[in-house]
Length: 261
Image (cartoon, rainbow, N blue to C red):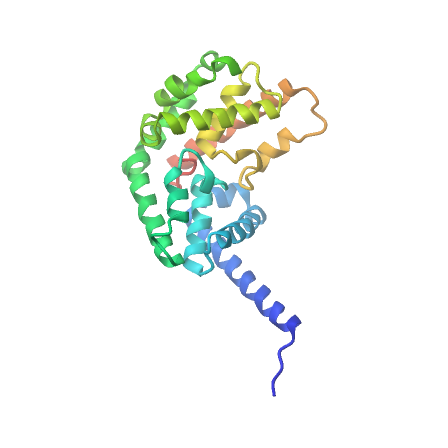
């Protein structure tokens, strides 16, 4: 009788994972070519591995649902499932009325399409307009402290990206601002542009931006042991964020996939 050892089973499992990972790299190359070109394959593979594990936590094990989950990580940030600006995601992922991973994946895809229609707009026009407004904004408008951070939720963010703010609502915006303020405080960045920067990054890149595999430059700056002055870290992060914004606008000119909705 044929006997398959545990080591062989594990080898088969790893081979299947590697094949899926290879397929996902090719998929993301087409789904988000700008990210593929600027981040490189090793970073995308890291993201894919993280995504496989997180998708499994929601019962997504089939290729289609796992692929969708990873694509949404690219689109909305690695922690999109708990992002306060995307409460509908958590509802779909945990809704007992939709048993079975295929049913939930189909609904997640449908709700994502509806969201993008409302928030990204035709040919991503709303998103592009928001990036241009952010690019043209005066730095003086964002020199705020933790004491008036709530103004971001009520004035500045809606002025930059009204469609996203209207869809999420003031309650979600308030949670997002508090999350950004919490991260700024943790990294001692509550003076000058620090608060506004952390809130803006959470708003555009997702609230898990400090540890998102797609943005290693953020973690690299925040954890750089050679930079001891928190204000210097903020200045470096501001400079690099402006570079990223320019890259995003340039990618749009090349008709690349949008990110950070």
